[in-house]
Image (cartoon, rainbow, N blue to C red):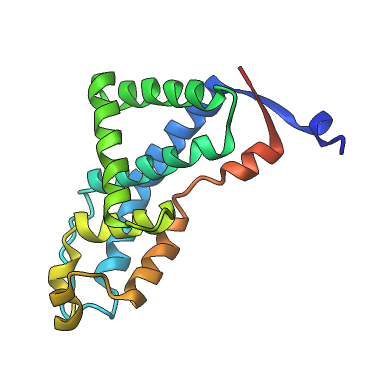
Length: 180
């Protein structure tokens, strides 16, 4: 009941900086392992060819998915302020124009919704987006390749991998009082 008294305070600016820095670092350092896990998955008819240095699509999917969660956990314009700060810090870190970055993230968020329609589960959408953006369909067994759908066994494994790149916003809300 008095948990709000024991929560640590963190500013929106600090939280946005931590999000940007850690997400960029995690994707940059973790993609080679993700690529390896995908290429070694036994469900493929032939091993997918994924350049471990080609993490751009993966990064954008992780960013788009994580940013999609923010309005579910922050309200009263705090979500808008937090997203604005994150966009500005991302634009600077990626050396992109802010407007171009927002369009790019919006494009990926729409893509996530499209590949997972009618489901609204962002986590699963991220896995499916990785599947399609890295053209993994061409490496599948004939049955799934002809259906143009991910093998559900592989998709479940990919969901487990993707879970490591999704921020636990609920945990942050429980541990921190996010202040302006």
